[in-house]
Image (tube, rainbow, N blue to C red; front, side):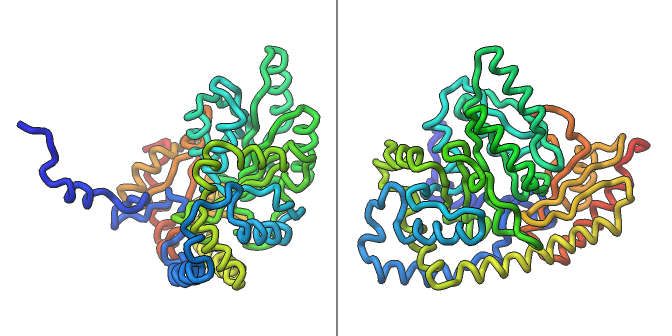
Length: 399
């Protein structure tokens, strides 16, 4: 019997179109994705039309390695408005999202077998990406106020005694994924001083900076640090649309020039040339700022619906935060409870989430879980909270 596919076209049609995959009868709070209904589809179409009219064939040509000049110029201004320091355009490189920025940086700055320090818990895909490059991922405990700097210092001392020096330290100081917490300004200042004194490259994931629901967050590590000790990565995936695959990094010009001269960017003529120019049109019109304001309002309402619902159905022994930005609520279950067991019961009750161990480099978060409030409306989030509360009644040590 032949193994050939009888209808290749049918096989292609059977492939999924998007990453999100959930049963229609399940409220899946495991995905940190924007709500499709909040994506500016029509505005993106109009901006693409305007970009094609304005730049003609140049829109579809090989782009400039560093990224399209109109986007970089606007990015410099925008970051000056929402952060503590305005980057020189020469310090910006356009990337394929925050993950693309991290991958480019690791490709040029590390070798297989190098040590990468990573706060734990952390964004699980970042760990996967670092391990894809053959790096040894070493955890640094994260507290509610950010990475434990005493633990970081001890680790640096221990590595130095063994003749090893870490290639980088990955951290998410602003609306942390998964915990939603913010590293305060004094801890940020202490971290960048430590990094400079130990010649440690800090990679700052700053993807959620603009999605704050109260006071703006503290300045980025990059804006506080000595040149060369911090590289900050950002993204339009959460503020515009993830399908654009558009992000950026800021670093010292010597590093960004090296990235722009890499084989990847030299060969490809930059990354995100078309979506970058489309976003530049949207930014120039003032739409981007207005859209981010609308997102803040929408996500604030969703956060409040989920937190209010959890407060009503869960006992005081369950600890959870009310994040000031980002997409996530982080829960700590009482002693004797397991997030894995709660997940099993919750899925049977029509709701899903990610257990805490998914974000840990070591064991020890089996009683934690992450809930994302970004993809569903307030009514569905309130319903999800009720379903989790019902599952919790049967998830304890006596069951």
